[in-house]
Length: 345
Image 1 (tube, rainbow, N blue to C red):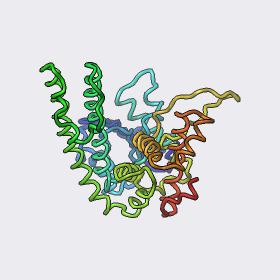
Image 2 (image 1 turned 60 degrees about the vertical axis):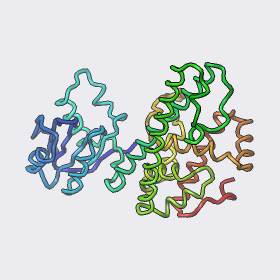
Image 3 (image 1 turned 180 degrees about the horizontal axis):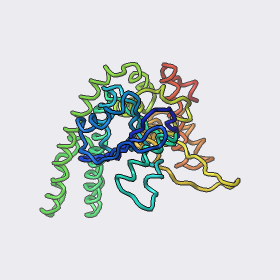
């Protein structure tokens, strides 16, 4: 966890919502100099901050509406920091909670050096990253539709499908195997949706792959050298990381990627802790997928997996393999070198 501890003359804590924002500005002595509920737009933000420039810092909790405020502060040379929502217990744990109190707490945490920082993703690649996340949402829905077709097929005790239903050519005439007209209609709805999703997903992949060559072609090429990391996983990892240099050590990176569980200890006693949601779920998914794909047509990888499975079990072995891939990617991008099989094993 990183805390913002730079000193300023004024500290602006903003409880931001989609249409409203409550701004609390305190000075270096902790005195409230401004406290108002405003419309969330750049004009109102400018009028609130201008009297306290040039030495004011803006702090906002990491909610989905922070993009425009981050861009405004960046374009106007105003220091901006984003608060990690899962670490800001002082806001969510109070007996009384409202926007006015929350904005004051944010400003106070900024002044006291106890404001937990989240990464402010740069504007340059932000939209493409969000589009990739939208693609993942569509892929999950696509998998649900395929699962429904397979479950329906099993429900009526028909022979299993011999081909992968992800490919449109393998879905033709599927509904015809069912005798009941209502079952046929239900399956055909799934097929029509799958065809539409397939078109959307392929369009997203084409667009982002074309732009990735302009954002960071070297990193994209290096990621493609890892067995199991194809073009889509390379894009996900590239856009979720943005710049590997923001992680000082490999431990910071694998923790951010949810590839390691941190110990919880008090008075010499270790307990099983939670906080499994802290980190990047998209990187966790990407490396977990890469671990499975890494084993395909890879005898050395299978031997390593068997060795880990005999000691830790199959589930834990896959997690360890995903973590090893995460460490490998970190050093590859830091050193700007491709995947070297001898070093990995």
